[in-house]
Every structure is written in C-alpha cells, then in structure tokens.
Length: 128
Image (cartoon, rainbow, N blue to C red; front, side, top):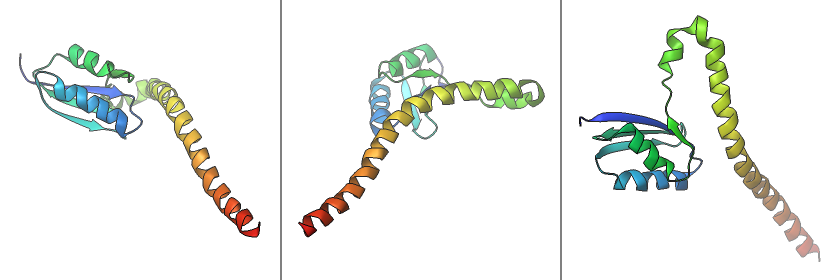
C-alpha cells in the first residue's frame, strides 16, 4: 500500500472534539502524520491507510464525519455550478452551525448574564 492523503470534514466544535480525533488517529496503524484544523473542521491524514478505514475510525469519536469535498471542483465550472455550489455550501453550513450555535449561544447567554448579575448582586449586597 502506498502513502496517500485522506481529507475529512469532521464536526468539531471545541478542543475536546479535536482531542478525541487526535487520540483516534494517534493510535491508528499506518498513519504517518495528520493535521486537525478546528476552524475549518478539516482533518488531513497522511500515511499507508485506506480512506474508508480512516473515515470509520474518526466516526467512532461520535463526530459527524465525511470525506472533504474539494472546493477546487466547483471553481472550475463557476457558471454552471455556482447555484449548485452555493446550495451545497449552505446545506452543510446550515446543518453544522445549527448544532454548534445552540451550545455556544446557550453558553454565551449564561456567560453574558452572569457578569451582569454579579455586579447587580454586589451592588445589592453593598446596599443591604
């Protein structure tokens, strides 16, 4: 088996998610190196590995995992596939951020509410 590169899109929202992917890939036979891009939700694996095996291994983390769709393909045919490309881009981004937005926005609401309440409580305690 020759060395090859496998690129996956993995639904990672935090360092803990990236850590889970890191642990799985670190234990996988044939993996020479890998790169985890949390911002892009992109995992690049290099080594003597089968793409399907890498996909299955990363899927076991419980994260939504799929093969990365190369963005160069839609750019080659901009006039024909622009509507298709935008539809394809919206589907994953609507799906992924909805799941991601729920958790951070709840956290942000709590975080933004707590500091406002703490000064008020402090002021009330000072007055009382």
